Amino acid sequence: MLINKKDLPAPRLEFRWQEPSETVDIAFGNATIECVYLLIIPLREYDIRREDDNGNKVRSEEEIEMGKTYSTGTLARKVFDDRIDAPFRDGAHANWDSSVLGLPVYAVVGDLAYEVKPQD
Image 1: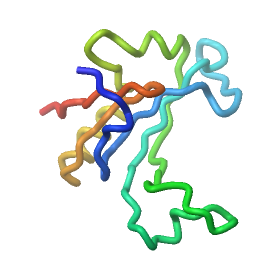
Image 2 (image 1 turned 90 degrees about the horizontal axis):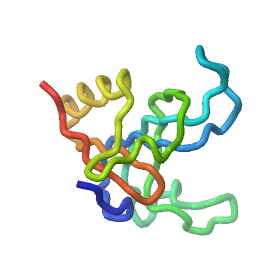
Image 3 (image 1 turned 120 degrees about the horizontal axis):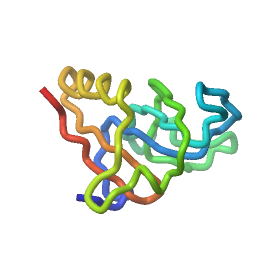
């Protein structure tokens, strides 16, 4: 079932599908999408990581990048009526990490999210 990204819990593991931040050459040409594998942790009220360079509180979560997968295609092709795809290799990593850390895993495209169920 697809849910709104704003309703996701923290902490969590997250696959964020997006346009590449740089041009990356892959086996079939240039990558047209990337999937960033993240650990998302909540920040407490007085945590300095909430602040920008001017001391303004601008975030409530810290995003720690743990991997990145590049692909061809479009973001729309990752979203289905009832789910969002997860990348194969980092999907396996998230499955293991979820088991060890006890955290849920979500795949995200734009404002849509999907809970990726662990595999045995």
